[in-house]
Image (cartoon, helix red, strand yellow):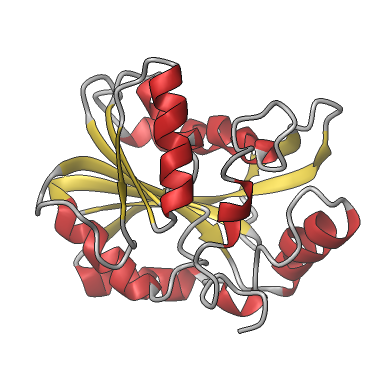
Length: 236
């Protein structure tokens, strides 16, 4: 697939050395975490303090550090050795105890039932096999554990909002970051979840991107529209 991470799993490695720079090309990704966790938080009934959390596809560590700040016992895994090195380096420089490992979502380097919660954000549309990745996430979760994710719907709207506008017009996402053919419809996602043994809970929500602020952060909000980027939660 042309320009797909399925043919280049290390696409984002090119930004590893600058991941945490103030003018990093990846900085807009930080804007999603407050919105994601505004959606996820009600499902984490006991809060995040002391909870064992794995972030699958952690990249350079934006979400793992967000979780660490909430008191979670955090691990992160990414297929890119360069991104894992960048994440480790920043955690060490800022005094954060985060367990980072190199590994694919479809073959997680962790024991069965090792985590209370697994997060996987902006990742499933990039992996070789979303179904295998979801099955592996199920394996590493304890019984009753939660899988919290977001991914991108395969619609005309997502082609406009997630590829054409951010990559080709606004230039806030590197060209080639997404392949529309790799996007996952909610029906397909639910099939992956049920096949793995998950029970979806709650109603999915979307994130609408409205533009970019002067500081590089994104103008975005939670919405009931799931035609583009959408979030969900499932229980093991």
